[in-house]
Length: 233
Image 1 (cartoon, one colour):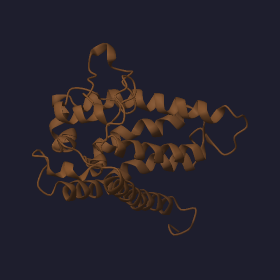
Image 2 (tube, helix red, strand yellow; image 1 turned 45 degrees about the vertical axis):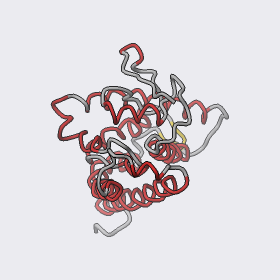
Image 3 (cartoon, helix red, strand yellow; image 1 turned 30 degrees about the vertical axis):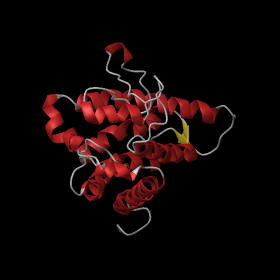
Protein backbone atom coordinates (compact mmCIF):
# COMPACT_ATOMS: atom_id res chain seq x y z
CA UNK A 1 0.00 0.00 0.00
CA UNK A 2 1.19 3.51 -0.80
CA UNK A 3 0.39 4.60 2.78
CA UNK A 4 2.89 2.20 4.33
CA UNK A 5 6.13 3.62 5.70
CA UNK A 6 8.13 1.72 3.09
CA UNK A 7 6.05 3.03 0.18
CA UNK A 8 8.05 5.03 -2.34
CA UNK A 9 4.97 7.12 -3.09
CA UNK A 10 4.66 8.10 0.54
CA UNK A 11 8.39 8.82 0.84
CA UNK A 12 8.37 11.03 -2.25
CA UNK A 13 5.27 12.92 -1.10
CA UNK A 14 6.68 13.48 2.39
CA UNK A 15 9.95 14.72 0.94
CA UNK A 16 8.11 17.16 -1.32
CA UNK A 17 5.91 18.38 1.54
CA UNK A 18 8.85 18.80 3.90
CA UNK A 19 10.91 20.66 1.32
CA UNK A 20 8.02 22.98 0.52
CA UNK A 21 6.82 23.71 4.04
CA UNK A 22 10.14 23.73 5.87
CA UNK A 23 11.74 25.66 3.03
CA UNK A 24 9.05 28.33 3.28
CA UNK A 25 9.35 28.53 7.07
CA UNK A 26 13.14 28.81 6.98
CA UNK A 27 13.00 31.46 4.25
CA UNK A 28 10.40 33.56 6.05
CA UNK A 29 12.11 33.28 9.45
CA UNK A 30 15.61 34.12 8.23
CA UNK A 31 14.58 36.82 5.75
CA UNK A 32 12.22 38.47 8.24
CA UNK A 33 14.84 38.40 11.01
CA UNK A 34 17.34 40.03 8.67
CA UNK A 35 14.75 42.54 7.40
CA UNK A 36 13.98 43.86 10.90
CA UNK A 37 17.34 43.39 12.62
CA UNK A 38 19.95 44.05 9.93
CA UNK A 39 18.47 45.54 6.75
CA UNK A 40 18.27 49.34 6.54
CA UNK A 41 14.59 49.91 5.82
CA UNK A 42 15.32 53.41 4.59
CA UNK A 43 16.39 51.57 1.45
CA UNK A 44 12.69 51.02 0.72
CA UNK A 45 12.53 54.72 -0.21
CA UNK A 46 15.10 54.29 -2.99
CA UNK A 47 13.71 55.51 -6.37
CA UNK A 48 14.56 52.16 -8.00
CA UNK A 49 12.57 50.22 -5.42
CA UNK A 50 9.46 48.83 -7.12
CA UNK A 51 5.92 49.34 -5.91
CA UNK A 52 4.98 46.63 -3.39
CA UNK A 53 8.38 45.04 -4.03
CA UNK A 54 8.70 43.19 -0.72
CA UNK A 55 5.26 41.60 -1.11
CA UNK A 56 6.09 40.66 -4.70
CA UNK A 57 9.39 39.10 -3.64
CA UNK A 58 7.70 37.01 -0.97
CA UNK A 59 4.97 35.95 -3.38
CA UNK A 60 7.42 34.85 -6.08
CA UNK A 61 9.56 32.98 -3.53
CA UNK A 62 6.64 31.06 -2.05
CA UNK A 63 5.07 30.44 -5.45
CA UNK A 64 8.32 28.90 -6.74
CA UNK A 65 9.04 26.67 -3.74
CA UNK A 66 6.59 23.83 -4.52
CA UNK A 67 7.96 23.51 -8.06
CA UNK A 68 11.57 23.66 -6.89
CA UNK A 69 10.72 20.96 -4.35
CA UNK A 70 9.34 18.66 -7.07
CA UNK A 71 12.61 18.58 -9.02
CA UNK A 72 14.71 18.50 -5.85
CA UNK A 73 12.99 15.42 -4.38
CA UNK A 74 15.01 12.88 -6.44
CA UNK A 75 18.27 14.09 -4.87
CA UNK A 76 16.98 13.46 -1.35
CA UNK A 77 15.17 10.27 -2.32
CA UNK A 78 18.33 8.61 -3.58
CA UNK A 79 20.22 9.92 -0.56
CA UNK A 80 17.71 8.10 1.65
CA UNK A 81 18.17 4.98 -0.47
CA UNK A 82 21.90 5.05 0.20
CA UNK A 83 23.23 6.14 -3.18
CA UNK A 84 25.11 9.17 -1.84
CA UNK A 85 28.32 9.25 0.21
CA UNK A 86 26.64 10.67 3.32
CA UNK A 87 27.57 8.92 6.56
CA UNK A 88 26.60 9.03 10.25
CA UNK A 89 29.73 8.91 12.39
CA UNK A 90 32.82 11.14 12.38
CA UNK A 91 36.01 9.19 13.00
CA UNK A 92 38.72 11.87 12.75
CA UNK A 93 38.67 15.53 13.79
CA UNK A 94 39.85 16.90 10.44
CA UNK A 95 36.89 15.47 8.50
CA UNK A 96 34.50 18.28 9.42
CA UNK A 97 36.63 21.32 8.43
CA UNK A 98 37.93 19.51 5.33
CA UNK A 99 34.42 18.62 4.17
CA UNK A 100 33.09 22.11 4.86
CA UNK A 101 35.93 23.71 2.92
CA UNK A 102 35.50 21.25 0.07
CA UNK A 103 31.74 21.79 0.01
CA UNK A 104 32.00 25.57 -0.21
CA UNK A 105 34.79 25.58 -2.82
CA UNK A 106 33.03 22.98 -4.99
CA UNK A 107 29.61 24.67 -4.84
CA UNK A 108 31.10 28.14 -5.30
CA UNK A 109 32.90 27.10 -8.48
CA UNK A 110 29.87 25.26 -9.89
CA UNK A 111 27.43 28.04 -9.05
CA UNK A 112 29.69 30.57 -10.74
CA UNK A 113 29.52 28.70 -14.04
CA UNK A 114 25.81 27.90 -13.72
CA UNK A 115 24.97 31.49 -12.80
CA UNK A 116 27.11 32.83 -15.62
CA UNK A 117 25.33 30.45 -17.99
CA UNK A 118 21.96 31.76 -16.83
CA UNK A 119 23.01 35.16 -18.12
CA UNK A 120 23.32 33.84 -21.67
CA UNK A 121 20.77 35.64 -23.89
CA UNK A 122 19.12 32.36 -24.91
CA UNK A 123 17.91 31.64 -21.37
CA UNK A 124 18.30 34.87 -19.41
CA UNK A 125 15.02 36.48 -20.46
CA UNK A 126 12.77 33.65 -19.22
CA UNK A 127 14.94 31.94 -16.59
CA UNK A 128 17.06 34.45 -14.69
CA UNK A 129 15.50 37.81 -15.52
CA UNK A 130 12.75 37.40 -12.86
CA UNK A 131 15.45 37.61 -10.17
CA UNK A 132 16.88 40.72 -11.76
CA UNK A 133 13.52 42.43 -11.56
CA UNK A 134 14.84 43.65 -8.23
CA UNK A 135 17.50 46.30 -8.92
CA UNK A 136 17.56 47.33 -5.28
CA UNK A 137 17.41 44.14 -3.26
CA UNK A 138 16.03 43.23 0.15
CA UNK A 139 16.48 40.08 2.25
CA UNK A 140 13.30 38.75 0.66
CA UNK A 141 14.93 38.97 -2.78
CA UNK A 142 17.18 36.04 -1.91
CA UNK A 143 14.79 33.33 -3.15
CA UNK A 144 12.65 35.48 -5.41
CA UNK A 145 13.45 33.79 -8.70
CA UNK A 146 12.10 31.35 -11.27
CA UNK A 147 11.84 27.90 -9.71
CA UNK A 148 14.24 26.38 -12.26
CA UNK A 149 16.76 29.13 -11.55
CA UNK A 150 16.73 28.25 -7.86
CA UNK A 151 16.96 24.55 -8.59
CA UNK A 152 19.87 24.95 -11.01
CA UNK A 153 21.94 26.91 -8.53
CA UNK A 154 21.20 24.41 -5.74
CA UNK A 155 22.26 21.34 -7.74
CA UNK A 156 25.98 21.58 -6.86
CA UNK A 157 25.17 21.27 -3.15
CA UNK A 158 23.32 18.01 -3.81
CA UNK A 159 25.86 16.71 -6.30
CA UNK A 160 28.70 17.17 -3.81
CA UNK A 161 27.54 14.33 -1.54
CA UNK A 162 27.29 11.95 -4.47
CA UNK A 163 30.92 12.61 -5.32
CA UNK A 164 32.53 13.12 -1.89
CA UNK A 165 31.91 11.76 1.62
CA UNK A 166 30.14 14.12 4.02
CA UNK A 167 28.87 13.82 7.58
CA UNK A 168 25.07 14.03 7.60
CA UNK A 169 24.68 16.74 10.29
CA UNK A 170 27.26 18.86 8.49
CA UNK A 171 25.29 18.48 5.26
CA UNK A 172 22.19 19.88 6.94
CA UNK A 173 24.21 22.68 8.55
CA UNK A 174 25.73 23.56 5.18
CA UNK A 175 22.26 24.04 3.68
CA UNK A 176 21.21 26.33 6.52
CA UNK A 177 24.47 28.29 6.17
CA UNK A 178 23.83 28.54 2.43
CA UNK A 179 20.39 30.03 3.12
CA UNK A 180 21.80 32.52 5.63
CA UNK A 181 24.55 33.58 3.23
CA UNK A 182 22.14 33.95 0.30
CA UNK A 183 19.96 36.26 2.37
CA UNK A 184 22.96 38.20 3.68
CA UNK A 185 24.22 39.11 0.21
CA UNK A 186 20.82 40.67 -0.50
CA UNK A 187 20.52 42.76 2.68
CA UNK A 188 22.44 45.86 1.57
CA UNK A 189 24.89 45.72 4.46
CA UNK A 190 28.41 46.16 3.08
CA UNK A 191 30.45 44.59 5.85
CA UNK A 192 33.42 43.79 3.62
CA UNK A 193 35.15 45.03 0.50
CA UNK A 194 37.51 42.08 0.42
CA UNK A 195 38.79 41.18 -3.05
CA UNK A 196 38.17 37.45 -2.57
CA UNK A 197 35.10 37.09 -0.35
CA UNK A 198 32.00 37.88 -2.37
CA UNK A 199 29.89 40.00 -0.04
CA UNK A 200 26.70 41.99 -0.41
CA UNK A 201 28.83 44.81 -1.82
CA UNK A 202 29.73 42.62 -4.81
CA UNK A 203 26.24 41.21 -5.26
CA UNK A 204 24.69 44.67 -5.23
CA UNK A 205 26.76 45.48 -8.31
CA UNK A 206 25.56 42.26 -9.91
CA UNK A 207 21.93 43.38 -9.57
CA UNK A 208 22.69 46.88 -10.78
CA UNK A 209 25.02 46.09 -13.68
CA UNK A 210 24.24 42.40 -14.46
CA UNK A 211 27.65 41.46 -15.90
CA UNK A 212 29.82 41.11 -12.80
CA UNK A 213 30.21 38.95 -9.70
CA UNK A 214 28.54 35.68 -10.64
CA UNK A 215 29.96 33.72 -7.71
CA UNK A 216 28.29 32.72 -4.49
CA UNK A 217 30.98 32.99 -1.81
CA UNK A 218 34.14 34.17 -3.57
CA UNK A 219 35.58 35.91 -6.61
CA UNK A 220 38.13 33.14 -7.18
CA UNK A 221 36.71 31.70 -10.37
CA UNK A 222 36.46 34.75 -12.59
CA UNK A 223 39.18 37.19 -11.65
CA UNK A 224 41.17 36.33 -14.82
CA UNK A 225 38.11 37.28 -16.88
CA UNK A 226 37.77 40.68 -15.20
CA UNK A 227 34.20 39.75 -14.32
CA UNK A 228 34.62 40.86 -10.74
CA UNK A 229 33.92 44.42 -9.74
CA UNK A 230 34.10 45.87 -6.26
CA UNK A 231 31.60 48.22 -4.71
CA UNK A 232 32.95 51.52 -3.46
CA UNK A 233 32.56 51.27 0.30
